Length: 161
Image (cartoon, rainbow, N blue to C red; front, top):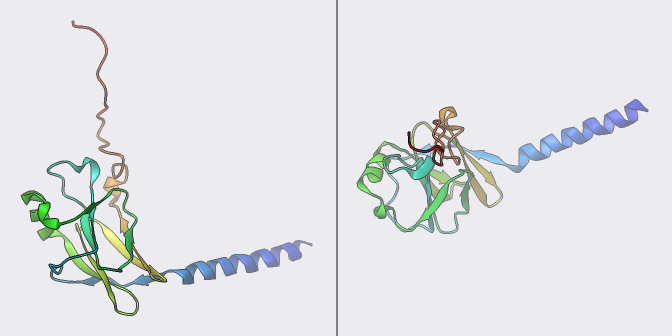
């Protein structure tokens, strides 16, 4: 009786593992010198905690028309034009790594630029591309939650001394 349950369970587990591993394909990163200056379907700004004035964005994703590129970053904004950024944010773009996003057939789907402390994996599934962004361990508690430096909101109680 044990073998009747054990064998189908092992076979089912193996089938699940095989099907999951073949549904997504990892696409190799291709560094480039510059992001082409042209019109994009979407520009995604990857925000860092609290979007503080002197805090650089994690990066930008430039999606070609029909590119179907999405990210898993917790804080994203869509911007119409990269030229609306202030001087500090434009300056930080000089220090970002720049990459092209191509599908497995070689078609360019978009581009991205990201600060060097972040890591990325580009996944392809069917017609969709997912840019997975790996957040540095030092920022794990603050991306999406604001600063984690002991500051609390609200006032203190008690009258004048």
